[in-house]
Image (cartoon, rainbow, N blue to C red):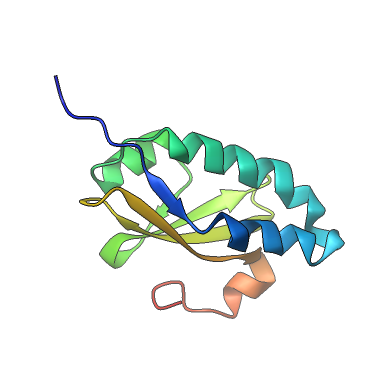
Length: 106
């Protein structure tokens, strides 16, 4: 029987600020919270396990993962430390905002 470690997600406040500070993005709230709740229960030890949970996730280098949120309307970029079971929210925004960043370095 393997060990189970619940993932820690840092920072929920970043996600909340996205829709709370601009009501135009309020439609991201429920899908983002659904991603959050699902991810809290995950036990990802490798990028392949992220892909099993979220088939449309894009796996980047060095632990970076891009998720499509709200039917691909928004992008969520996280850095995942698989060894320590931590997911750090780096970015959430529209596709236009996403196109303006470097997901690998943000």
